[in-house]
Length: 265
Image (cartoon, rainbow, N blue to C red; front, side, top):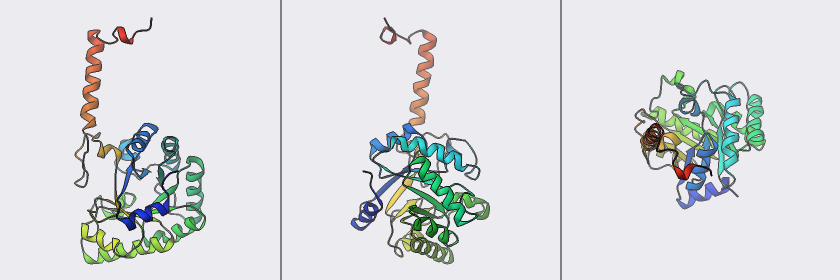
């Protein structure tokens, strides 16, 4: 059985960090499972990674479910969550309930993730009251970039920190079992951490959160562009893959591939 909500609470209480990674297909999910991560997130970041778009706004509910199905197929023993995409939960709590229910029923994931603080607390409560586990997400919220004015660090001044704390408390009170804190000073994340009892997962939020999340492509070094400051590349798989395909092309052209060992007799 995969870890569950109570397990994450126990990890927080014991000081054991929670490792979360995104995945968008069956192969990535299998790699994440073999690596032993605690949570796999089907992020709406698939828009900017898999689809090559500038932001996450345009990804659809159907696309999220499609990718969640592929990921969940590889994850029998890993807790899995799926982002609710832009405008799949903002219209009403009833709309959110319908769409979140569709994500869980069609893909089999364990939870959904929603961006927003106090403004979505009522929606979070509607979902959790109906048996749908919810991860919150505050700080830099990619679905809100048109309001935030781009990908900017949040919580640099005291009023912003106070709002982050208020948002986190509202999400906890509404029933969220975990909150992602994105792109904020370490001190702001610590203020949130000290005012709630549910686990926090940081992405560009410093060292004091209960766990960390990175985008799969960032963590393994597959993207060509320079990553954000908070990203650590744990491998340079892009160069390795390019070199592998270069060698493949050279061997095809020279006739070295296929060799005797690759031929049926």
